[in-house]
Length: 295
Image 1 (cartoon, rainbow, N blue to C red):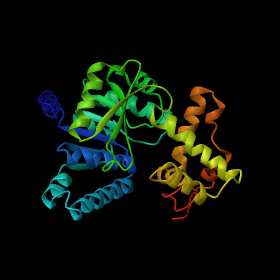
Image 2: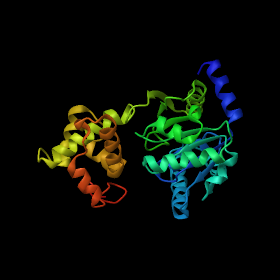
Image 3: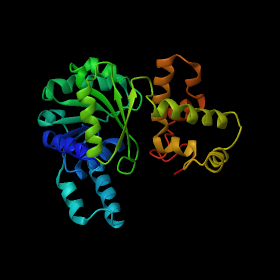
């Protein structure tokens, strides 16, 4: 890393000491973990105490795996856990220097949260969203601080995946984007900037592929196993599209496709009817124990 880059990261670490993460699901607990591992004090917030308890247990399991693989020392694990706090109310984030939202992928819920965070957070604090498809411009407009709102889309599993998709809203300032990019570097992540279009870069390309695989199942072109095998062995994908959809969560896939379909008005993004039916049945993939495969 160049000396100038290192100096910029040092400045960020000096100005941002406490990070708030709202939403303690799979993405939220992973985001909280990587910030805590990087030396930041972290407050993970969720209104449901059982969710916070599961998040703490999951972070402990994740860190234990790193210790087992000798990529993290036991002392570093303990220090990471010591920097992590849990809270059930967002007003605990009044002292945070940077806040990342990772709640349910619902535009109305996110807009309401950003409006509430504006009233709580310090005036200069950046509000970042982990959304995978929802308009950053719309969240910024609801926040009361649009120049300090941006997308910070981590990839799952957060502790292992190095990419972060940074999304610039219509009013996001250069300074805010620079801060987020330097934070990514401090986390050991690679930041790639995307404009604020539905689905950004990642899901605009990924979701139509997953959707087409679902149409292929629905139309009897092939079994899930056959389709995934073709993509793994024929296209050298590490995971087949249907196994990946199960891993992401079929409800999350449906939400992202709905945003794409609504945002572009293009029928190529129409969610597969089979996907809608599976989500309605509660077959959400790995998280529910059943999707295109059984777990």
